[in-house]
Length: 341
Ligand code: PHE
Image (cartoon, rainbow, N blue to C red; front, side):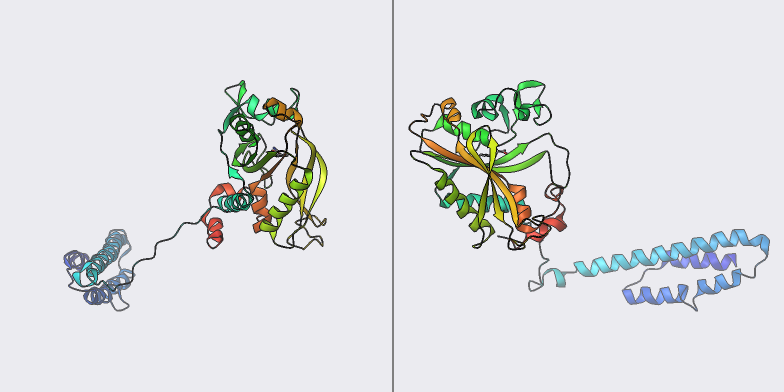
């Protein structure tokens, strides 16, 4: 039996087929139901116990060698046939499809918002993410003891209380006022940073779009009309807004803007928590102290400002329930936006 196994092993090792059909024939002859190896396995059952160990090992070796040899030969022949000139030079062969990337939902919504305000005459302004206290807080009328300045909300750079990661893009509005005299009409999109625990509804990095409009005779009614226009453009023609009194150090009076819930049409649903309204941004008339701090005469000029979170608008628009999805870059999530604007 040992001789028979060795002879078979040699044949397996020397086997050089010309095509796939020969390999299949060979496989059936050796490993098939009536194959030679199968017959040896059968005979193995009745060998003397003292021979079992040696013969068993040999048989196993034969079997794995045969399987490996057949697989390798098969792959070699398949590769060779894929590579032969006839197919390579076939210009009519369909190409392999490339996977196209898609825009990130945050970029999509940011672009939409920027586009809506540019139709109202706003231009985009930019500024640094690492800022100083003046541009993020002091020039915006934050009292020295304001909690937003606290370590709990703000990331400071190297323990220097003057250098920090901006907590809102209002800092860009300050930089614009430094550079430019009224009339000013800018929107400031950008990344902002707050020291918050990451959860489905909060993240330490997110995106804002803030706006600033300063000119002679700008009124609260102008602001209301602009924001209503924005809401209709983003959430649909039937959208309405309401304003609730609020507080920001840099605006007076200040308001929180709600848009009618676009999912239930204002009737009340889990997303709007039964109220029919969704909070989308903060806004207000620029506080005269801010104008003074930025060398703009509050007797002559007035203005309004607003600010919103891009993640929040995107969540409401696309029904995304967990903020963290925006940062994980899971392609299964991202590909859902392939066909979005
Ligand atoms: N800066 C505010 C924030 O980050 C938003 C805001 C901007 C509110 C302008 C009013 C006016 O929450």
